[in-house]
Image 1 (cartoon, rainbow, N blue to C red):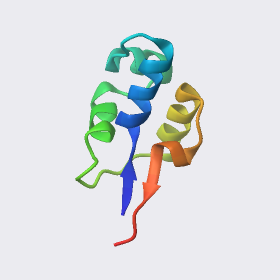
Image 2 (spheres, rainbow, N blue to C red):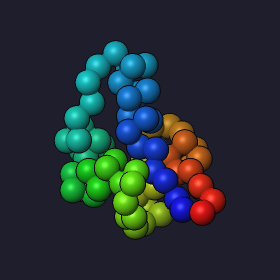
Image 3 (spheres, rainbow, N blue to C red):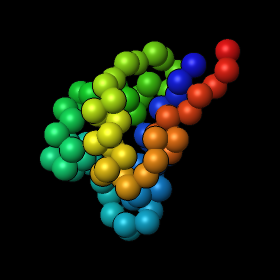
Length: 75
């Protein structure tokens, strides 16, 4: 199973930058729709598929590695 860790990454960035980050902020910087961001952020317990292009955009925005956004959990 692949688990998205977007919420944790998001919270860390807010803490580091000392400001609240909204979906619209990320949407403007990445071009990823708010709905897609919401699905990724809330997909910790459900299955959701997104493109590698979106993962690339999130890595660029958060200045992180793929492993910071995704985690493999064996079944």
